Amino acid sequence: MTQIDWQAYLDGSLTPEERTRAEQILAESEDARREVDGLKSFLSTLREAALNERVPMDRLEALIPAATKPRWNWRLAGVGLAAAATIALFLLIPRGPNVHDDLIETSDPVVAANWVQPLMPFKVPPIRLGGDRPLVLLHHTRTSCCFDFRVKGSIYHVNVFSPPVRTEGKEVTLSTGISARQKGRRVGWSQNDLVFVVAGQNPETSLEVASAASESLQKY
Amino acid sequence: MGTTFWAMYYEGRREDASATRDKVMRDFEAQLRLELPTLFRVAKRLARSSEEAEDLVGQTLLSAYKSKHTFDGLYFRSWLIRILRNEFNSVLRKESSRPALVLEEPEGIVEPFWDEVSWRVDAETILRELDNLTEEHRLIIQLCDVEELSYEEASSALDIPLGTVRSRLFRARARLRENLAGKIAVEGGTR
Image (spheres, rainbow over the protein chains, first blue to last red):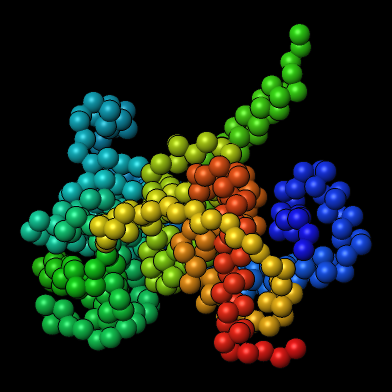
């Protein structure tokens, strides 16, 4: 057995002196060549195997916070309101929600829904869970938005999509009587011509959140 | 005395970092998109299920977005992986009171039999045994051997010294090889 670290040799992390010594040994020793070839081959098999695992790009891309800055709906704000006055008010009056490029930090679902509405291809319902489960923020992609609620110390996401979005898992019934699908910590269902998916830390709590969201949608 | 080589080198690094940072800030969304496959694979190596990996990536993207001003401009991928790992650890902390111990195992004597392993095992077995390693070991293999991060990038992603990257990778591969060799011994093989 040689004293050369062949892994470091392949990783290119030997010193120039060690590398020269390693190359001398490789030129002379068939065992060393076999070891290096075996390691190379193993690493290549490992890499290929790991890179061949399926990556759900469509679903991952939907998670990217969109960089597009939402526009205020001027018609709602009042046609006669001058831009300068609006900017002045915007700067001078202390605001509740903290608005970022693609998310809004607010506990008011109506403010959140109105803020994101101009960018969504569907009518955004203001979802509230009630009880001690406040909205923390709302973020969005180009085609969906997500209300984040704090529930039992964790964040629970209520995603809103326009159909068709497939939901899968075992069949469960929400407190509103609407049928839903649950897979692990996710619960998905259709209501009001939209698709909702709740995801959180705990499967039982995800189901509770889905039921509360569904009740809120019924009232909307 | 003029400017030293190292002063120029570090100045160059600062300029590179600044250029990288500007580029990332200009098109944050596109840069995130490029890193999605790596983030997902690393998340899956940590969480060990696609569903949890997706949640982890989603949380990472949101945190990255909110703290994008903290990116130092050096290694965007490493920065994202560091956030991902923090998110994963915060979930673990919430779910378990068990302290996350970082144990460095003593180095053992390693016999050369990579060639024995490389041609006898299939991809599925390799991935299964990779997932059976400790979190640190499967993560270092994922970063260095699968995603091909340099030692420096891995060091930045894991927030550990370069020497630790090297020794941890060495031990992780040795452990994986040992586990695979054990599989061959149990299941047999033909040459």
